[in-house]
Length: 349
Image 1 (cartoon, one colour):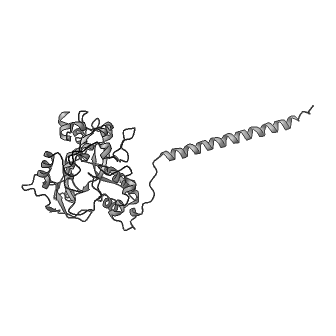
Image 2: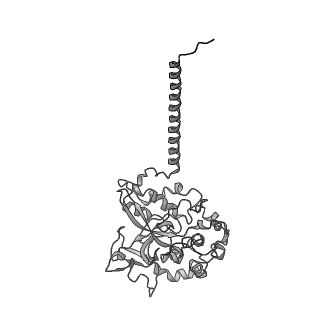
């Protein structure tokens, strides 16, 4: 029979076992906490890696942005998908100076998504409704003149605060549209392209317009009022001047021209940040936009961009500042099959 251990030795052994168990439990808890933190970090949006063209020391041009095309558009094409250009740049804004950010935003067409090389000739001045009320005059660069017409019908102006490389947060104005993912089923609705009579859908012709299960638009950044940012709305220095501007608009910019002449160049009074003085005035294209509408939008992007915007157009209530229920856009009767414009949607509510 094994002799009994002295009580003192038993007590010491029991204490050692309890201490070991406590240490093991603490270690397991710490490991679980570390794993949870790592998992949470993995779920949080991670800042993008350093992008050399964003650096002030890099001699960057818009070609550096264009070279990222295949990294930005991974599902087929850029049709009506300029929100992905915008998000790529806004994610890298903390690496850029204000001028570098603006220069890159000049490198694509907000309507078509096409890469563009900015110039005076493809720089258009527009005066658009802005979220919260009123109008704003600014500039956009386009791939072709029909984008002026589509902008007038569907694009509005909103703001977003952006922090840049110097750590300063600045307020920028952006071109925005309603969220097509408010009604994602509309992306599957067939329509006929006016160019060739081909039957297609947004799911086929605008493959980068994609919706998440929670109703957000993949790859999109939203503005202060919750709309999809598709490009920058570049400030007009003439509108900033108390002598020549009124309430964010250039004086006379909303008045019709007596002799609209497409292609005619105009000049600013004050040079803006880009250093450009010349531009095309949206009002020069009033008659051409009307003719394009009569012919079924058979130029520019055709119906693609218009169909994306018509899914959930920005409601007039939002423009007046009543953004509550208006953020979702127009009425449920404004479907792609109806082929109605934003104004028609508004009238039908």
